Amino acid sequence: MNIDGFLDLVHTRRSIRRFKNEAVPEELLEKILEAGRWAMSGANAQPWEFVVVRDPLVKARVLDSWLVPNNEAYVIEQTRVPEIRHHHLRTPLAEPSFKDAPVLIVIVGDRRTYQATVLGANFLVTEGASDAIYLKNMANATQNLHLAAAAAGLGSEWISVNRPWGQALKKILDIPEILEVQTMAAIGYPAYKPGPSYRRPFEDIVHYDKYDRRKYRTGEEIFKYLVSLRQNTEPPYKQGLPK
Ligand SMILES: Cc1cc2nc3c(=O)[nH]c(=O)nc-3n(C[C@H](O)[C@H](O)[C@H](O)COP(=O)(O)O)c2cc1C
Image 1 (cartoon, rainbow, N blue to C red):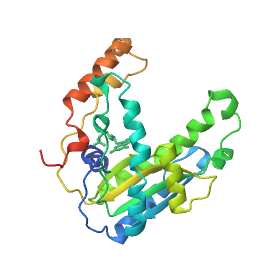
Image 2: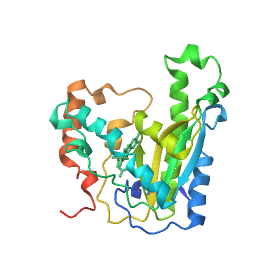
Image 3: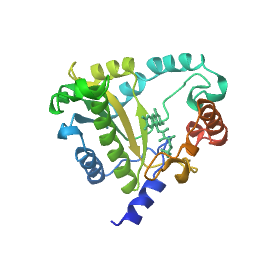
Image 4: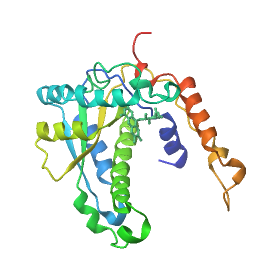
């Protein structure tokens, strides 16, 4: 693959939030997991492990466990100004967008891998640095899974997992107490053609040789940006649903 092919992949990958109930070929799934395995990590700590959920009975328990902890997020969201409320959390939740995905990859992290990182990071970088390194490592593996899914012609959804849901998932999947459920990735064939996504313009975010202060955004500008982002983006969780 050359750089243009890679950029094409990066540009065309979309978060998918409705899936066909159609199996993912084993060979593709293994390649996606392999891409996760090969992610970069600080000091090569590799804190990730992947629990692949395909069994319909196990999947049903995972889906059932979603509603209650995720409705907590809905309640909290109502406390902020309506203009920037998350699309997903404007009405109470009913069912997970990934309910029909044939594969759920539960991305599990092991914080004991902190020890791979230079000890000084805990003291000399910034408060919470060891946490940050671990979380960056986990995000790298997750991103690799999503890019690989797109390269395989599949859709994927990055599913945030809050703490109470993570605890419930650990029980269902018999994940040892000391490990953490970080994120989930739903993988499958998209049930719809996704709309465009949005990124801030190239020239707004790239600086050469020094930070160009003309591009600096005040807090107020960031707030306006978030409001316009919400107004101008098609509510992602409604994509693929009848209008
Ligand atoms: C840290 C993180 C958390 C995310 N959480 C969710 C999530 O819980 N559910 C979801 O559908 N998408 C989630 N996403 C996907 C983003 O919403 C998505 O990447 C963004 O809106 C841009 O859309 P695109 O991926 O189609 O370009 C998450 C992405 C990241 C990096």
